[in-house]
Length: 93
Image 1 (tube, rainbow, N blue to C red):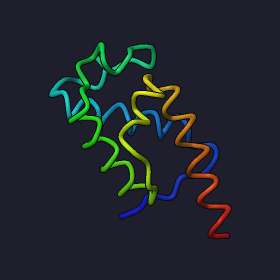
Image 2 (spheres, rainbow, N blue to C red; image 1 turned 90 degrees about the vertical axis):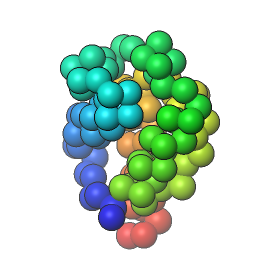
Image 3 (cartoon, rainbow, N blue to C red; image 1 turned 90 degrees about the horizontal axis):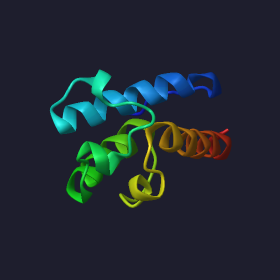
Image 4 (cartoon, helix red, strand yellow; image 1 turned 30 degrees about the vertical axis):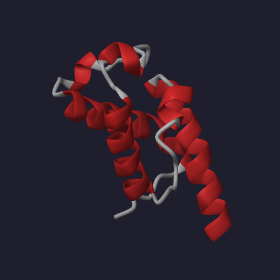
């Protein structure tokens, strides 16, 4: 299932990432701040694969797990994904 995300939904995208990461780490979403590095939170490479698989499925993307390491904060990853989602939407429009 893919989720339609409009350009104004960056905050919604960040909240979705926060919720997914909290689920993977078995913690509350409030514990996953925009300024906390994923590695500091305990998100390892195995969990990064799970996170990106879920993101790819939800948003119709084809990202590699390494994107979590090159964009190691929610705010940075959300901005990157926003661009990828917008680019994918432009290709299908």
